[in-house]
Length: 313
Ligand SMILES: O=P(O)(O)OC[C@H]1O[C@H](O)[C@H](O)[C@@H](O)[C@@H]1O
Image 1 (cartoon, helix red, strand yellow):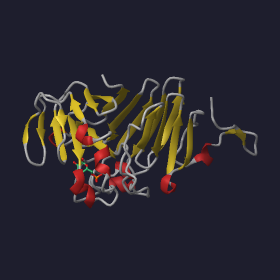
Image 2: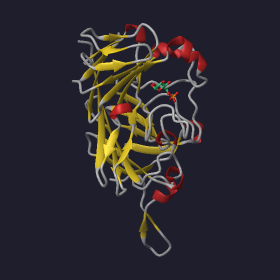
Image 3: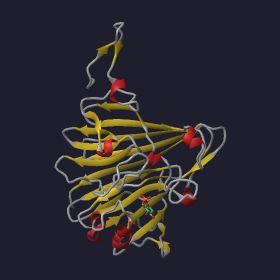
Image 4: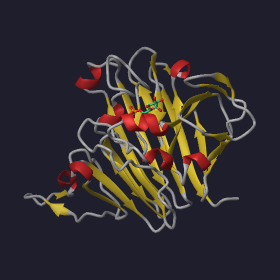
């Protein structure tokens, strides 16, 4: 079931319109997936099914929109975001890899979010739309602060049951162990961050800019800027705002990072509107810092997170 007409070349041999879609697209697209030129002219895929819409930019394999039918958008995007080559997009789900945070030898949060990924598979089985993106080492990455040979695959599943599943697999193609950090730095849209609570983090060791400790029994609520790194396995995390609940499940993730810049930091970021901080919260699924991934030669590590929208209970 292909969305594009079949073509025949001069010799009568079968070919598809693939090469004409975009050099980064290595597969045919089902009718529910279309390709276009997005904001800033960046190549973009759009998923449109009876149960949800989504948008993914090939730069960074960056999911910028996921909206189940009848719901407000689940992912937050800044109205001031850049959309330009090799420039981070503010919102959606940036992929931080192979490092997280500041690195004097490279871009903040690594180069995966500002590098073009290839789309290698796109399928629609009538229930789920599944897109698989691939990123491998290149002359640029081999010259970077993380020069290792690798293959990363990123699977985005837009599900019919108000779910979005994201899975990042990294394979070590070297003959030695490699280490890396990774995060799905998800920006979630909320009605008001000051009236939002997060459960499921109880007892986790946390550190932030001013304190360390164990997350208490009470739900996490924000009353000011927060950059909180919570360490350890937890059950499902449920975020509740004034309108709905969002259940977040994770696997092979040692860290959950909760971030909101609040007003003062927001005002310092050119790609973040001064008044937009009330509408968002980042709940990031990660392996960072002391929990970085140690990956033996030839092995694969897979980080998974799933979002499921539900009504207030
Ligand atoms: O501006 P970015 O590079 O996208 O980073 C956005 C934010 O990411 C993380 O959550 C960090 O903990 C913050 O310190 C940082 O400000």
